[in-house]
Amino acid sequence: MSKQRSQSTADSAAGASGKTSRRAFLGTVAAAGVAGFAGCSGLSASGQSDAEQAGVAGETLTLTTTTSTYDTGLLDEIHTDFEEMYGVTVDAVAQGTGAALESARNGDSDVVMVHARGLEDEFMRNGYGINRRDLMFNDFVIVGPEDDPAGIQGMDSATGALTTIAEAESAFVSRGDNSGTHTKELNLWEAAGAEPGGDWYQETGTGMGEALNIANQQGAYTLSDRGTFISQRSEIDLTILVQGPIEGGPEILSNPYGILAVNPGVHENANYDLAMAYIGWITSPGAQDAISNYQMNGEQLFFPEAVSEDPNFQQYVPEGWSSGSESE
Amino acid sequence: MTPEAVFQVLQTLADLPFREGYVRSIIYVSLYVSGTAVVLSTLFSIPVAIVMGFTDFPGKQLVKSIINTGMGFPSVVVGLLVLFLVSNQGPLGSLELIFTTEAMIISQFVLATPPITAISLAAITGVSENVRDAARALGGTRLDVALVVIKEARYGIATAILAGFGRAISEVGSVLIVGGNITSASGISKTRTLTTAIQLEARQGQYDTAMILGAVLLALVLTVNAVVVRFGDERSMNR
Image (cartoon, rainbow over all chains, first blue to last red; front, side):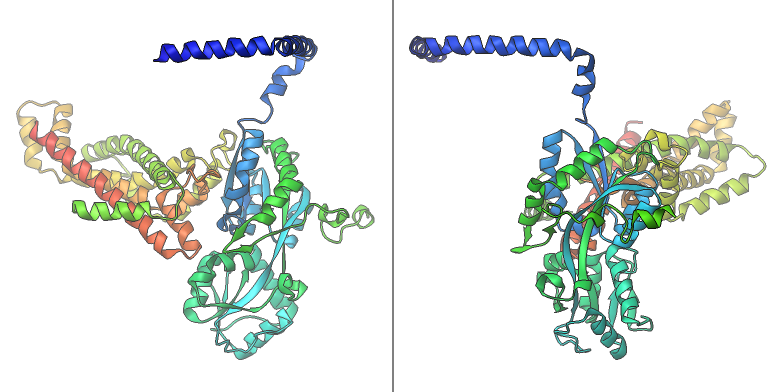
């Protein structure tokens, strides 16, 4: 049977070649021409060809990042594309903003994706990070039990809501882990002019998901990034009481994510080429679309902001930096 | 565990919200890291225990105290120490071991060695003096006596190895720090173990899936213990 089949294949091939012999001839000429051209260019470039072949393929990029980008599943979703495009592996280490920057400071990662502009700026000013880009944003929300004992529902001011919670001494759960969310929370308390303390204020030292669970069990308020809250909303009884800027809330609750390469001048072993390839890729229109298309429970979690007709120059330097102030 | 219970666990596993190959790959990494660490610890610990069990030297009590203290050393502190060692800034930084299974093996080696040494030593010193005397009386050399004592102490030594394995596979603090809890984008573990996977689920508040992974870990440890015990029995029967 296999013989029959091969016979008929050969027949049809012969028929086809008869009909299209002219086209096949042209094709052969064209192929020969391309091969000849390729041969020439191969010769002329032979000195460099080894280095070119090596490229970045097969290398591993170590990305230290926050729990919110990793735990929402965003990175796993979009990284496959980058890995296929460059033939590389991305090792994403979810640590929280403070620890992610510390790993990079020790030269243990190549690129950092975090959400605490103050800490990113310090990291840049100390020379560890370069080529910072605004990547994406979402926002923080103040969540709490539905019965809302302190009565903050619908308040326009995040600092006002925190002051109200402090005055009512209603239970509040703090991350207490030097993460981006924790940093934002401390900034909010400072802006509110309130000093959190006392029995009602609990530092848990846990990730966002655990902190939400603790707040849920204790009927407490907490500050959460919208992404983690959405991904966990079905399992807890907490509700959003003060919205962030995405839903018209105060701008102070915005949650911008930045991406930085580790400075190869400080850490020789940092894979700078691949880090820049990654930053180039993730700030490209294609990857930015993938970020905005990523949904959980039918809701968009992250809003890209790297691609803009009118780039914000402050994304490249520490906030408030100007060449004049630095040279003095 | 009855076969029905095993079947039920497997059925629950099939329904889990994990990607294909995920659970298998973290089981593999767990066994690879802890298994390698325990083999290395055993190769190091047993000779140390034998030397300590058969000789007297100044400072022996101090060494014993250090080993016993090591049994209670928090894994997270060991993780930090190994991190300093293998971090880019550390003495082994040029080997680029950070966030690899090799770094995890180093930290679990440090964790598993004290219990294996201490319990082996207790087993060896616990062998009756009569046995040693009999071996000597029959004209045995020092080596013969040592072999006889080790044979007598083999259950204690097996227990020591299992205790070391139990400590290694159940710890989460050090492998999280030096391993980084990494999977590929397609969900295949690189440095994620069962314990760090449980920690990740708990961090996200997914306590039910965390519990199921905990059950997998328990089943794994039970299986390893059963295999080691069975292996020991067969060897003693073939003696």
